[in-house]
Amino acid sequence: MDHAPNNPLMNADLAPVNVEDRTWSSWNIAALWIGMAVCIPTYMLAAGMVEQGMNWWQATLTVMAGNFIVLIPMILNGHAGTKLGVPFPILVRASFGIRGAHIPSIARSLVACGWFGIQTWIGGAALYTILGVLGVFNPLEDTHQLPVLGITWIQFASFIAFWLIHVLIVIKGVESIKILETWAAPFLIASGVALLIWAMIKVEQPKQLFSSDTNFAQGSNFWKVFFPQLTAMVGFWATLSLNIPDFTRYSKSQRDQAMGQLIGLPPTMTLFCFIGIVVTGASVLIFGEAIWNPVDLVAQMGSPILVVISMIALLIATLSTNLAANVVSPANGFSNLSPSKISFRAGGLITCFIGVLMMPWNLISNTDGYIFTWLIGYSALIGPILGIMLCDYFIIRKTNINTEELYNANGLHKGINWIAIVTLIISILPNVPGFLNAASTQFSFPVYFDTIYTYAWFVGVSLSVVLYWILMTIFSKSK
Image (cartoon, rainbow, N blue to C red):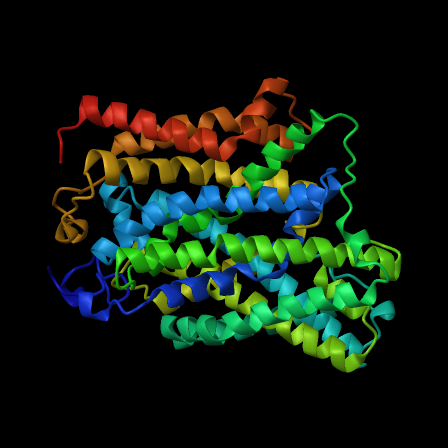
């Protein structure tokens, strides 16, 4: 295989990881997931479920079910990363072709940019609260909004300050991200448990936090809420199911990548969402209102020292999640556009700038839009890409891929695999009407499209696997 200086399809960041350099253990993978899962959006994730009528255990089980479902493609797609040592943009060349791979890798990158912006905005809100508590400004007087942006200049300055921290770490490179995740994981779990203990102590009767009451008039209404929420829960990590090879390429073995994900993903997500539900229930009893955003909750705790310490914990949680989940993948994706000119660091900086331009405060302005437009919407795009990759790797190629061919512009995977492109388009189409209904009031497609959209990720994965297998069997020789 040509080395990076002689091969325009490769650079040091996109080259296969040598076997002796694959040093990540189960703990490293688990710590990675803990660092990504313990974040403010995870804490707030069950908000939509409870607002839609679920009680605490229904919401918790929905979170658990969604994460065990998405764990399956995580481990399956992670298999290729560990076996071949290549990142997602390189692996997807096998199914989409070397040129065609830009479509799924950039699609994944743009979604990550949106998530990067959301997380940075939330972290900036924590910093904003810290400044208010320390008396730098009076939040009650900070009301003048900037034109176009729709936020105050102090809110924007807090957002940019937190954004700059990301930029500095990106410049230092991917190894600094691994170190941050490993050290942050136990601290983040301890912080979440401490918040749970605080809630249990502050309320007079803790059993009040575990009410079985729901807002469903009839039992059948539960399922109308459950399936969209389950799809949204799967969609929460659907993006990582695509680019999990970016991390499993460093794993010592298949057992390490599988066990690390099993230990790190479902338990952490379920625990932290459970903490969010219980602590929010406590906020109703303590403050007289449901406070779903932990930034707002911590601001109500009174003691300036406690508020600042808690906010620093939230900042670390957000930073650890953002760097691993929302910078690594787009950095590799943008690098893949021109490996000889765009390094991992350059790709990471591109991500940071796009995340600002997307104005993330508009993406999470309400939970309904957050779940039905953002989470389910991009799961409708991500699902078909995942289905194509899994079908290609396990069914068509039976896990046998020549790594050198992934870097050969005139080889087996040259150009564009139009079968993958056609499959992707057809697999997305059933969910488009439902997405348009959810995203805008200007559309009114028949209601059955809304039902299909409820299962967007599942529809996309299933349809793409079957269609890709049929088309590859008919039109392509076995490779």
